Image: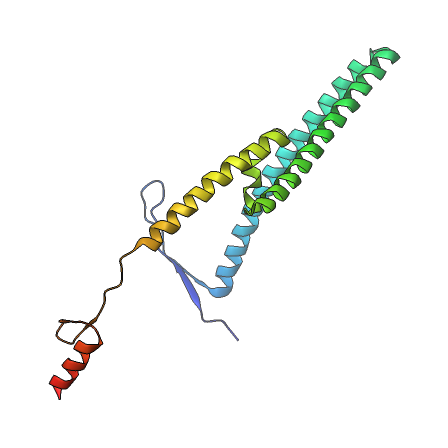
Length: 186
């Protein structure tokens, strides 16, 4: 069975200013053209990415070769010192990351203890435990003050009116006046 669905591409003006012919495609032809264009674009993107990866890889290889040549010229004692320094730097970096993680956990615990949301931890975390506690203390006092102000503002409002308004919009006083109005209506 032949597919009768068609797609029409409108007339376009080419670079020379000449109008190109309008072409009508069947659904299968349109899908085929769409698929080939998609394949072309994906291939182009992959080639661009591959070129970037190869360039980065070649740079890293070049750096590794230079480092190997430089290390080949070093004495065994110099190599050992350099290796020790690299390991020490890596250890210090890990130590700092561990300290930062521990500080974040303690900050979250302190916030919970103060009744504050733990999501503020990253904003309130200082360089050390003391700075962090001071930040939390200042934040809590400011936060509590702002909450108190907002609660008071919202509770202020207007005092409720006494009495009732009738259907004509006239103010009717207490229960005695309501009773009188009810007797008059009858």
